[in-house]
Image (cartoon, rainbow, N blue to C red; front, side, top):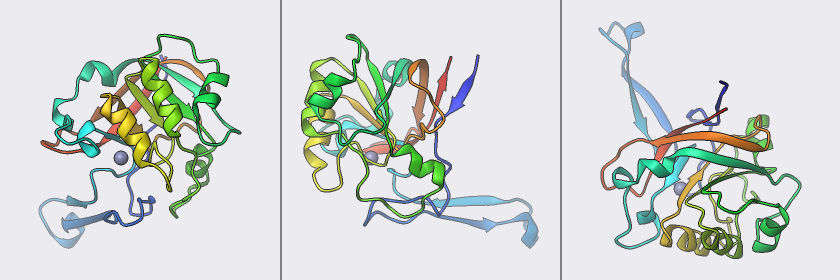
Amino acid sequence: MTIHDITLTITPDLPVWPGDPPIRLSQPAHLERGDAYTLTRLDMSAHTGTHLDAPAHFIRGGATVESLDLATLIGPALVVDARGRGHLSAETLEALDIPAGVRRLLFRTDNSLRWQRGETAFAEDFIAIEPSGAAWLVERGVRLVGIDYLSVGSFDDGVATHQILLGAGVIAVEGLDLSAIEAGDYQLICLAIKIGGADGAPCRAVLMR
Ligand SMILES: [Zn+2]
């Protein structure tokens, strides 16, 4: 069995959504400074790096992270190669020959090149899922959708995409690094940190086969 880590490493250099808190890692205690132990403090948003959006992110009264069904976050997943394409509209998804009945879908787009290149600046022109694509996914019964940049929705027009997916209870996993992953079937494990009442949380996401 091969285990592929598709998680971004959290460092202060990782891009964050404009206006979100910056990532700060500090060590209030450190062995090198004579303390008895080293202790790292995290200051960052719940939507840092590889993370998921719970319905509460865009839906009033929506489910929060600690109550998400683990059966959605673990199981068979299909990685779809969407490189060389623009935003994922219903038409684009239709053309990708995605088999019926897939519950977990991860899209490898040109975004993953940004992680491969180690880009640290936020890219406003990342590839996202259009509202028509989101509706297509909901209609198909998809329960988890993953994308390889920091939002499922586009920079200029991302609200509707989130509302459609999260409103239907679909879990959005964002900030995946799929640069080394070929298209095909895998087992996904994507466990979010169990933060009570939170609208999102960082995940460690792996694909196995
Ligand atoms: Zn998010």
